[in-house]
Length: 451
Image (cartoon, rainbow, N blue to C red):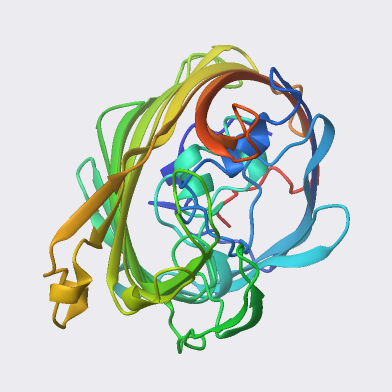
């Protein structure tokens, strides 16, 4: 189980098709995490529910998350089993089941054609999107114990859906390789395409029982993506990598409850989303064995905008139909170095919400359609950001076993009754986290996480 040092290569950019006949490789991965922090085990929950960072504190449930929702003590992080198949002249397929220890779900199931004229490949089924450097990576392929914050909070643990992917690998020119791709997905991803539909019997914070009008699920596809990834290797053993991606959610719905510093009353919204991602990196292959001397430096920036209309408001019904534009960003800076055979150390600085604001109409009585253009006088509310710094040390005992220790320091906005008056206030928490991870793979469990 080698350390993850080259995310784009793991996603298949420039990979040569295998020439063997039918090959079926079963695999299984199990991983556990021991967790503790300086806030009585509440730190992971503080991050997952940071004020306004995830769906601006939506009550909509997420579809999938391996991200970092740990409790104090021992946690099952990864329990996966499946198979990967490759047939010469036809293509390949993957099937993966995962469990949280209580239920089992179909993680992904897909077919991908072999490359045809012009480097074209088609993939269909259920799969994780190829956007960004880390979206398609499963926990056993992460370089840190938990997932980077933008993927946890702005992509709800990773964008996955049922649909089709089209990629084109441009014929290699000198040291350059370029891949273009697009995806059409049916997804209820809680960050970019949450689906609630009409809500009846909703009990508001003020004690009312109401019905909330929401559209039914949008027709396929709910989500479109497009991406470009490039590699440049001007020097043997060294590669520069870059990428751009965009995600468009055609229909997104959010149901919010009162929350201090975020929402002054229960309300519901629906509309569309856009998330843009820019990625850059540099990798050097070391001269030592088992990853010794390997270096990987990567940086990613996320910008997300939600253009929504108010469909329900508990205390200000005259605002129904008015626009809300929600804007938030995120970033990941990561450095990894193989200090010795099978040993890797790393540092990661990640955050979300440096840009974090909601734009609403200030004077609805003077507004005229179309509300989506925000032609009314505007009022902008700004919210706090979340930052975290993590250090990690990884020991790859052998091809199938990994032991990892991570220490993080986080600064997170949370809701807490700080003065004992019975009301929650928006406060900042600074705390440390300690995570110890063990992973064990069987069969082909050390395969590419992007399969």
